[in-house]
Amino acid sequence: MRNKRQLKMKKVGLEHLKQYNQLLRYVFQVTERELHSIGWEEDEIIRAKSPILEEADVIGWFDDEKLVSQVAVYPFQVQIFSRTYEMGGLTGVGTFPEYTNQGLMHKLLVRALENMKKKKQLISYLYPYSIPYYRRKGWEIISDVITFEVNDYQLPKNKRVPGEIERVDVEGPEVRAAYERFALKTHGAMLRNELAWSEYWRWESDDLMAAVYYNNEGDPDGYVLYWIADEVFHMKDMIFVNEEARTGLWNFISAHFSMISKVIGDIHTDEPLAFLLEDADIKETISPYFMARIVDLEQFIDQYPFKPDTAERSWVFTMDDPLLSWNQGVFKLRITPAGKGEVTRVSEVSEDRIDIQTMTTMLLGYKRPDYLNKIGRLICSPETVDMLEDAIEQQIPYFSDYF
Image (cartoon, rainbow, N blue to C red; front, top):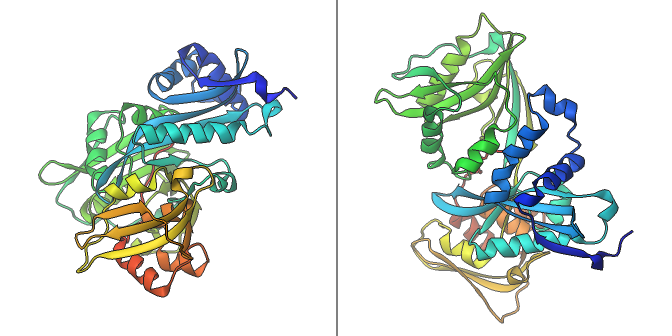
């Protein structure tokens, strides 16, 4: 095993693009055969990843000139209860096995979070390869994906709606316009920039299609992304801003009745599909999807919209963070009657306790204070639980992106 003192941490640039790709492919076991099966050639995937090294914050450990461990942070934005937050999308995490157990990744994650704080990226999202590992580093589950299967005879009957469906180019402006309208109204959703869109489409086949629902004023209120193969309607994603659009999109899917035997797909809302169908006896599987962690609690709370009340509310608590010293200690949360929050470090002693993982999933609405208190993740009085229940909006984050 090489001595870790020989290693240097530094920025990964375009000159390291081939090494960056080789490390990713080794860690995630992506073979040439798999790339070719979806139409990728070696030089194509390298070119596709070059914008990441230009736009993202990528840092790594080098053994002389050999890249041996790396993380990438994408510059993204998400909508949290109607407020736009800068978000650091953590990805590209990997270390060659002969360099593991030296604390390299721990130090990279600390540096990545320090850089996020400097850039005012107050929250970080990631897709976990290991939920326990990222929990130990301060991330927590904040969204789910529901995988469903509906037989052709269970499809909803056509219901008249005032708008209309149009099939469009899957990468066209109509799809982007529909998503933007949806994301600006949707808690937790990514506000996609060019990098986010390129990541969203990266591994999709040429068979993917799109249908947009327009309301009677011509506004795009939703879309379904799909492909059809072997008499199966595969739904990649469906978004809608209201029930009218949802009904119109399912009218479109049901119109394929004579062509398909079933519909299989994913939905990322917190609402199971079964209850909305007349024949609710369908297969649904709920799985955790994305994780998040607050980078800087004080700055995060400064933007965060609590629910208004008639009086000022406050809470003194001890918070733990496994990586970041500025999130550790005793803090006081003040919430004005208008819902403006402020967190300050105090010298008091408090037996109330929470960690950054629990604070994140609570403030994003994935798990409620009452539940977190019952399972021992939030230590506080019943009165504080009631205050937090009243102060935090009740909505589970939506997130359908992947990077």
